[in-house]
Amino acid sequence: MREIEQLLRRRERHPQPGPPPQAANFVLLGNPVGHSLSPLMHNKALQAMQIAGSYTAFCVSDLAAAVAGIRGLNIRGASVTIPFKTAVMEYLDEIDADAAAVGAVNTIVNDRGRLTGCNTDWLGFIQALGDKIDVAGKTFVIIGAGGAARAAAFGIRKMGGTVIILNRTEAKGKALAREFDGPFYPLTAVGKIKADVLINTTSVGMYPNIHQSPVAQAALAHYETVVDVIYNPLATRLLRDAAAERRRTISGLEMFVRQGAAQLKLWTGKDAPLALMRETVRERLAPYEM
Ligand code: ATR
Image 1 (cartoon, rainbow, N blue to C red):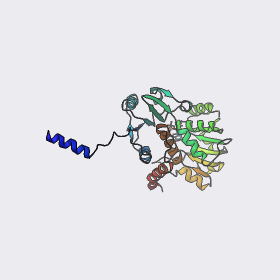
Image 2 (image 1 turned 120 degrees about the vertical axis):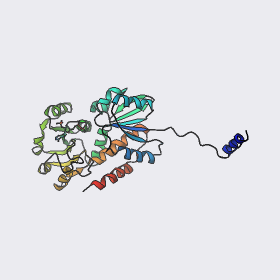
Image 3 (image 1 turned 45 degrees about the vertical axis):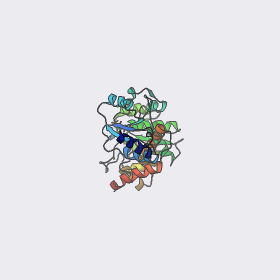
Image 4 (image 1 turned 60 degrees about the horizontal axis):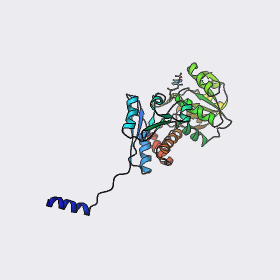
């Protein structure tokens, strides 16, 4: 009895803290996810935003079960990456208009168990481009016809630009070109076309294949600006060749950071610390630069 009284008295002297703030946890669903820089970038941002919670990457073996886990664990938001950006759509309650038009979801928002699929890839892409060039009225040659190409084409059309699609596989390239009102040409046409901007959306040149480029250097002189959606390495072979041709270059870093910041805005309603996120990713990648 005496011991309990002592304990209670001690508790009065040292009041217990109140309940912790509502946790806001986030996940990345992909396969593989080992090399993703999203956990590093998002956790740094969450800390700076004073949001109690964490962002964790999961290598998914069962997509339906993983999405059920978002509901069951009250996960506030998820990023979705390769190879699930399209496959995940059927497990969600709602797809917003932009994600439906892009045909891919890279962001899930959980509102009390109701899951909405969104796409911030196109927004990140357009914001990164918008920092350096005016999209309206310009012509963009897009190399590739996968998810990244779709996000780029959607963003460019939305902002009043026109697209030309170049792809290794004709059927896939033609389908994308038709959808976004542009012509299709085989990859070999890259040296014959002249346009304002050339965009690589393929994985050619990505770490560890850092000496590869999807386009021969001489062809780059036909384009004012050269964009690579790859951010690892920061300076891809394509961008280094473009710089040697004195072209303006835009790396995938800014697109990656912007799509992440747009995710944080959707999940928390708050503006993300862009500069901190950019520096966090840049610092991690810098040691690998040549
Ligand atoms: P993401 O969703 O990241 O865009 P994806 O759907 O796999 O990835 O698309 C990759 C694109 O890069 C495809 O258009 C692919 O060309 P195919 O349609 O012919 O498959 C293109 N790609 C990938 N590796 C390539 C290579 N070595 N040469 C040319 N194109 C390549």
